[in-house]
Length: 272
Image (cartoon, rainbow, N blue to C red; front, side, top):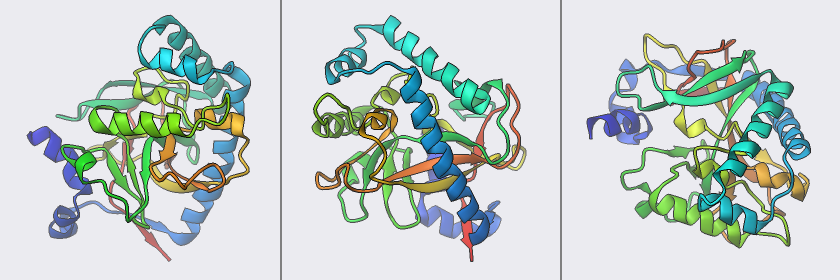
């Protein structure tokens, strides 16, 4: 229980208010925030295009098979193809492993290559909720809900009711032979290798943050066949492919070498 609370408290509004003066807060100017937004939007499109060119098309039936664990060899092969494509495009690959933080659980590490400052390094997957939508049941014992500046929420938990809702919304939004999002982030192997943002741990005084969160609204003009690599889906039935999709990326604030762990800052102030 203490480990869960230590991870969750950085997203708890009451705890943040009571402990604000004692926390390390990362400040981001409006100008630098806009620069990161532009860079991440461009890199996101490059990522989707590279994955589309490298990973063969899959039908909704194929995704059902992969989710049920009936073809692990195929998912492993697809995951490797995708990881190699990211390595060639961005010069790095990621891997999950035990965090170096005490009680940190799972962490995200650079496996091969090097992440350069300013690069898009990860995406925060999950169901996207508008501020007025109900999320009480999903939030119980859930430390993976990320709140955006405008109140939009992203539920990155890959188990329980959160998983059920994501799968339901994903197959609800199928367009002909095309999936409108990636559901393989629910498994340990993924066809979007960067869909691991929910596993990035909060920094400590001894381990400085090396990535920042940046909110990106993916425009509706993204080709439909690219959307199968997007690890997000709207909970709202009316928010279809004709609407911009809220995504949250993580941008490197420093070079991150092979073997190093990613650390984020759950407390980020945007200054004008």
